[in-house]
Image 1 (cartoon, rainbow, N blue to C red):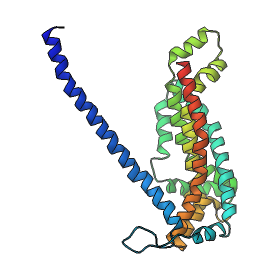
Image 2 (image 1 turned 180 degrees about the horizontal axis):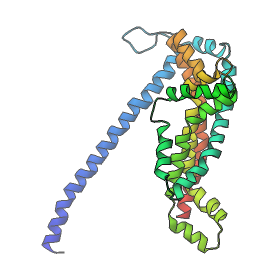
Image 3 (image 1 turned 120 degrees about the vertical axis):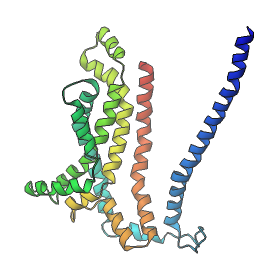
Image 4 (image 1 turned 180 degrees about the vertical axis):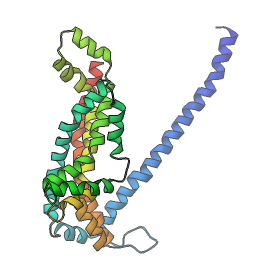
Length: 285
């Protein structure tokens, strides 16, 4: 080893060591930021749901109680709202998949005139206040006799899923290397086999993420559901808003915990499919 190369390596060691230290410091900052902005509010929400009261400025509850849970769980119309949310939302996600995934495949795998316009049009759905879009839709829903119907509620909730169910899977389909598709065709696979055995397994993680985000968007949608579905179809978010306005904050905390249970259960269930898609992608690569 020459003196010059040894000197160069010695000079790069402190720089690489400083880079590693800076990387670890950044990771620690991001970790504590996540704890502070995500974990702490969730812990506070759960504690508030069981707290009887507080003596300011202490953050420790004076005592714990199940009074709020008993009142919320026995409130009129709660079970009906839960039933509506857990039945309408899967229908919205399934319908969104049927409508949006073919468009996502076309946007991800093909180039055609007006593709940018289509993408911008889909993005523009979430670029403006949603309430103005709902108000603009009301005359059309009135004309079609869909106000106060479950079909009208599904249509309104479907709007909030279009962006997730189109953009994210389109990115997943577009990220599949053309070399894998060409290799499958050279091995004798037809276009349907290429889709089911190559494209879909590689795009499955992005589809799973889009399905989760679409579920959360439809499940938490309240403004449009209230405008179109009230008074017949009052879902859980609408019921929570009434509790926030008319009852102590502990009622809202309890309902927020109840409202998060289906979302957490979905995330736990979807992990298996997400990792299955990731393993398939690694195997194909």
